[in-house]
Length: 251
Ligand code: 13P
Image (cartoon, rainbow, N blue to C red; front, side):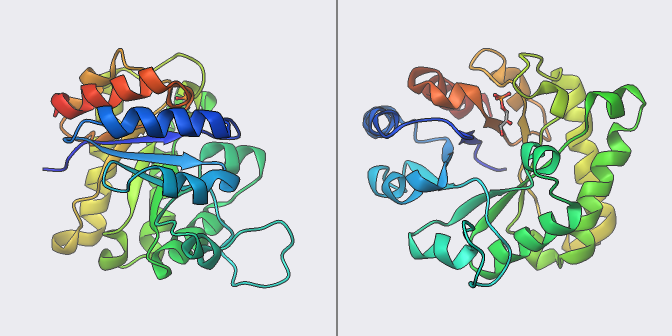
């Protein structure tokens, strides 16, 4: 049984003062029974790592370049992240896939770059509204997971965390129902088991998309949902703490 994991993704938001406010609040109020991650804009990662004690909140990045160090102006690779103490990174968020054209192939390369540098990747998958309406949601997600499985051994997959974030639920206040989310999580788990067989790792699966303190309990009570990936609500110290507190007692 996994401890619940609550991961906050600030996206291209936040400030130094919010970081100080949150670090101060979590120092005294972080619930012990919940693993908490905060995925920050890259300029805040190093100071975030210093401000939060890793025992309470692990701070990491939202993206990386999969290439080896070299002439790639403006990019950040896994060795640079590691240099500042970063041990966790989001990979393949739908905003990167949709806005920046990130392909399954690049998501796989980024995931491998993380694993090769002992950075734990949190890989996002999910379908658009049109794909869901066309009845293709499972097929789309299976394709995204399939690209990962084809490239990773069971031992490599063991360090991967997967977040199912239906794109239509991101930033829309339209949370997937606990039943729909559970159904997709169960399907992801079955897909992993079918592929890896007895070596299949007990992968942590998170739900993301308009998660708020209100509603998180029901999501985490589902047997295949091990945590949540939180966007907007992770920018509000009290709400993010409330989500962590709720998660700590929900599982
Ligand atoms: P919201 O919680 O703002 O919908 O964002 C979800 C998300 O994309 C987290 O990665």
